[in-house]
Image (cartoon, rainbow, N blue to C red; front, side):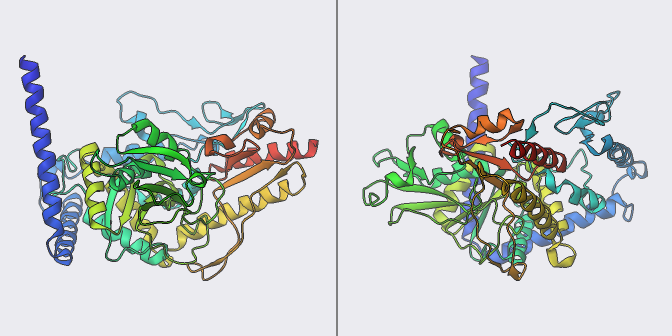
Length: 484
């Protein structure tokens, strides 16, 4: 009984805390936004400056013996970074922080040995996952400016000093980034953070769904081929106020019912890289615009997106998929409040460490060359890979790639060549009904078309993994094409 009383007490505290936070956000919306933002920015700058001055021994913040608290951590980081793993793997800090633990290399696919120097002869090319390792060399070039050392007492509380879960300094950096790239309009809109785009996708579905059980559940739809998480996540949560209802093609000219329709629109699309628009029309149709790949790395930016709800993620921008940080740009205040409620109740915000790392990474992205360096690097890398892949597939009548058109890019101020994140490869022969199995037999691991609610004559091949992964993929494809 005592345990149950304690549980009830703790639950009441959590509910009270959640209610307090939600009440705070609603009150904050009614205040002067510019004043609030300016105040938050000034406070963040002061706190950052104090931290720097304390750490550099420029002002007396703690005892003299504590000035060098960061030295051992910095030495550990440098030691791990110095482990080269033959250029075919990486050593990470994870194990080294444990006393007496010997740090080892984590080898890339098809490489093994203590220093990752041995190439496995019968190893399959990994072209399945979307891990954006292609950006790793950029961050190794910017090792010093992108590094961050976090104290053991960094932001131990649930919220920031202004009572929210969102860093206003990071919000301002996001707005500046979009303004420089020209891929999204943020003025007059609201921004929320999530644990990657994955959490934000369902938060958006929740925000667009009806509040009461007296209304029909919202119908969640998408146009094939589409990112499978739209379906799997909606079905997994199995909520009373929304349900997955398949392809948009089943609902064209049928949206005048009493039901709300929630359409996922991915542009550029995953898996085929095409710039897309919504299919359904009507006052009761709501769009969730997944803009994860709407960056100069992967597509031309013809104009800034101005959708009612747009979702972005750091994973496809800087390559830091493991940091699990995404953001949504929202036009309607009521939708913003509902998403905020979902995120507050679900996780009480994104971790402070993830927000700090995102802030540091964005600061590096924005510095030098008018904020274009990372985009030039990323575009050049993917364009080169796409060109090599096209050269290989062009020698074959058995396989084909998606057809994409070059466009004028406002970011590069010219018509740019193609650089999609993925190849949407098709097995052209009728008898090759399962293209995934054809490639698998040739030592190539991709993702089958049915995962994207498409025909299994298609396979998605990732072009954004490491150089090792891509080189092995091209070698395997060259061998396969030569055999036909």
